[in-house]
Length: 212
Image (tube, rainbow, N blue to C red; front, side, top):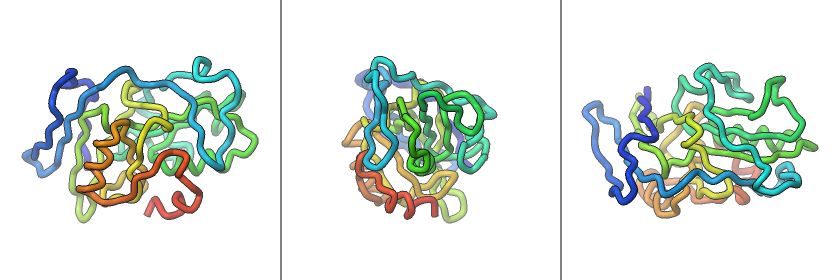
């Protein structure tokens, strides 16, 4: 499966991004933290509203606990590869627990949100693969991307470019892999295929094509 790298290891401003082959055949892409993780409110066509109060009142991203489970599929998030997501809702307890709702794939987070008509979402965070040292490892006929659950690895979903339906998958199959740096998303798509989309371009039709 996929081994995780610490998001903070070797992340110095001005450090060049590199691709390097590891002894076990996995690929590590080292990236630079370009600034503090942005907290904000995401606007997604067709999803629940973000509510009033603006970005200043939006909850910050949190580190997902080691035993936190996905609010769609129930799997333990930290134990499996792929992008993580979390969403905060006003005056709601997702699946009976305190905010945030948490997910072991990005597409499941969008699906969950689409299905919560009448809920007011205050913030929505996804893994920022421009801000972590991530690995892509081959397991059988699959290429799997590493999991990151620390608060510092999340960024507001409206600030990333997603690579949708690439050859690289996560726990729940084909997914939306987010990059805060447009150039990183373009480079990833060039190597692994897929489609570039922003959060407001993620539709129910697209979600229905993922996870396979």
